[in-house]
Image 1 (tube, rainbow, N blue to C red):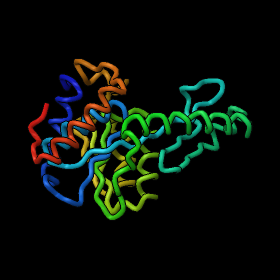
Image 2: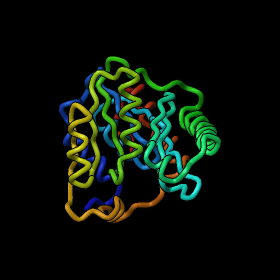
Image 3: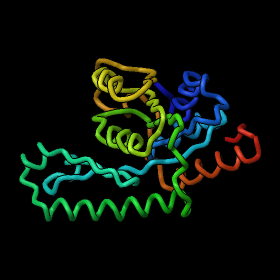
Image 4: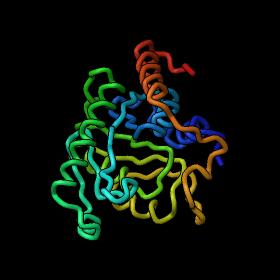
Length: 221
């Protein structure tokens, strides 16, 4: 059990200490909850922090049911089985893609203030989130990062179900998961406090890390 996301992030930073001060390593967090985790890792290990905006493509009958995912890099994943099972038309799929493209643009612009994603090619990327449930968004993010030619992918999360941990080991170069409980009903059950993270907190985390690294000071927060 973690007190909150910051507590979990500090624990992950200890597990990732071998990457401290490595100029070829970047922390990429999945917003919004993953950014608080990434913030603690970046400050502790003196590593740059960025976000990768990935949006689930929801079905018309149930927006929470993913028929795919879309990343800001342009990568698109479609679950043809879900699309077929729920009879999603080309028009419905295109409409959802356009809607999520707009949201990706809004979020990426708001989080970075017009700056581009940090260069990933040839670097080791620590991909962080506050936990893994279904893994759909994370898997889309990993494929997008591979497409961007990241040299190594390391997934680091506080908690995930055992099957997700096994699946990940076949997809990435290294997996760091602090807890893999057999009884897993949701990420929030492993945190004493699990409030929703707002856009403003994401922006503050990114700006604080950027300013701390530019000053050579990582004791912020």
